[in-house]
Image (cartoon, rainbow, N blue to C red; front, side):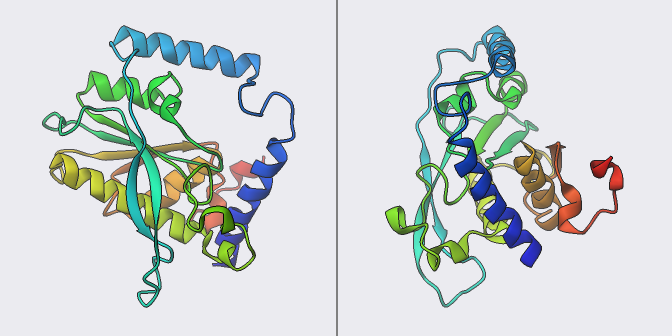
Length: 228
């Protein structure tokens, strides 16, 4: 439990630190990031995905998923690539586990996620969710970062948020268990969340692609290759 809370707090510290680093602030990207985005955009254009737009969707989440007596709720943002209510038979749902940064329409439609290209090709859906306490997904608005309110910034709550979004989207599209698989993905801390979501919420996710993910932090995998 303490390890998971520490991971979430470290994510906050890292995000604040990156905000002061040239080339990482909004509107500035490295050459490698630009090349990656250009490649993804080219792939997206090839399948007719360029030019589409989406707006942030909102889902009501409990402040604390693990305290039924706490009835406080808040609004979390997520994005979808598909037109409403269009999911092909046996088509997959791709879920991007948002890491420690704000997300936007660009996450789904401007070549950042290869899963959007896959979703179009397979008549599936691409979803990206914003992490609680980042961007505009603030449980307590401008008061979210007080010591008391930061108590609810935990990996457990984050994973429960994501599991709820996946279930909500499955119901929205009438997804059939066993026929419309959910594949979660992420990188670094987001990769850890992707893997942990599959490990701790197998009812929500069928597979996970965890890129550069420090999975040993969860204590469920004995894998020392991360440290080599």
